Image 1 (cartoon, rainbow, N blue to C red):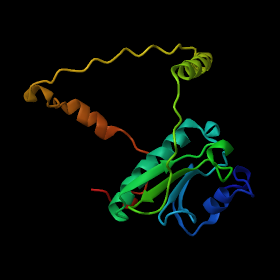
Image 2 (spheres, rainbow, N blue to C red; image 1 turned 90 degrees about the vertical axis):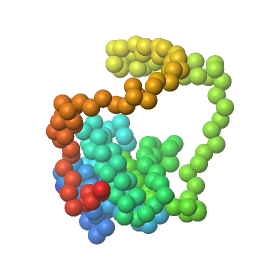
Image 3 (cartoon, one colour; image 1 turned 45 degrees about the vertical axis):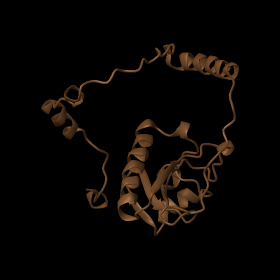
Image 4 (cartoon, one colour; image 1 turned 180 degrees about the vertical axis):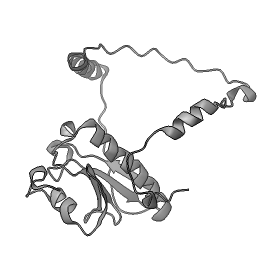
Length: 192
């Protein structure tokens, strides 16, 4: 990490620059084991210092989440965890501990005594309408597009079994195979 792209007071920048628990790095992101929480928790973070999600360029954000997906699969296979939490704490109000955007990939086990639950409040129709009005107005200002109403979905009638099978499309399979993936060391991706 160059000195210009890191914050000397940022624990994530320090870890990214010299952690002996680093698992992967490239020009954009770094993955390393967290010293806090459940053993095996991995942090995916941009190498450049971005405080919150809104500052992170789209391609780096996508790469962090692509890596989180891969790491989650690896955790199931190698750590034999029962689940994973993939978390972003975005801003002080959301419990962000360090001033550096991070994606936490946390392996979960039965009775691991970690509680990430929250008690959702009941929201009235009036509150939903007001929030939609405010957000839709900003959405329109940002994108120039008005949100379209979502038509009510009618339940589908069950189809005979032979019609419900997916149609094979060899052209689609070839296109999917050609889709490039972000660079990731193949030795880290030993997933069946």
